[in-house]
Length: 311
Ligand code: DON
Image (cartoon, rainbow, N blue to C red; front, side):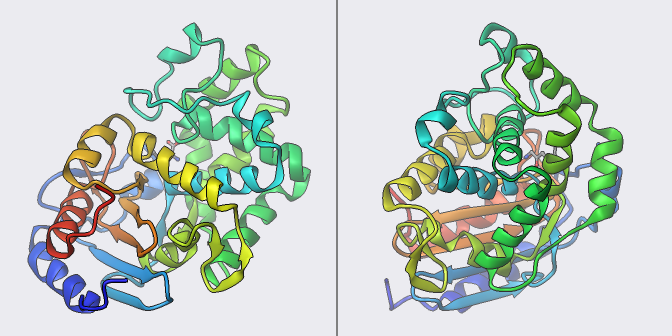
């Protein structure tokens, strides 16, 4: 750990610099009506070091809809409890170069999603979690997040209902995969889990904490004796975040930030500095690729101020 860095001062400075820009550029996701009501001027940031030190600034303690950041935790849960070969037989590990909700590659690739972080891939992972836990799938995922964050985590049921009411593309993706025999469980059951995982509500502080196993070689955020995943699995998840975690902007994220990141259309982005810390930023206005406009700028500033990067 670089102990000469005052992380609280770094985060305060990032909020001071960027908060005035919040909501000026980009657009809050409106295709899920419950998300469209979020205040575009919100801006929060938090980090947790591998030795448990936390720093929080701005709206870093305000819960928000984690959306696709949940794909990180559902993948982790699946990797924990099923043979990896069986998982990767169903889901690829290559960047898609397409928007997160794109249908196009699925047809030529026989219903096998490119990676676990596009919607199709996350729906395939949800099918595996339903396979593992049946009717307890939702509760198991929520319990897993609570265990990682060290406090009870809840679903925002209004967001989940809004996702279900408007999730026509996800229905199309799921039925398309089902037609290729790539989902074992009923589409309604799989999507119920997927819509709920997207509707988990966590703050930046809770997300920085929950994802901290990714910086700790797989060890639980607060308990070094518990492996959430193996060291090798943690490395692999970080590699997937770097190459696929921000969809068709993954190259730009690697170029400008140089950290494994996972974003969601709620405006959150989780970033990992292996062996050092996890960081989460939230600003709801998105760029054209569905990533938080100011969140990306904040991460860029963080890397410039601290010199932390995997490269
Ligand atoms: O599937 C959807 O449309 C959303 N519930 C999640 C998408 C998402 O966050 C994509 N990420 N940027």
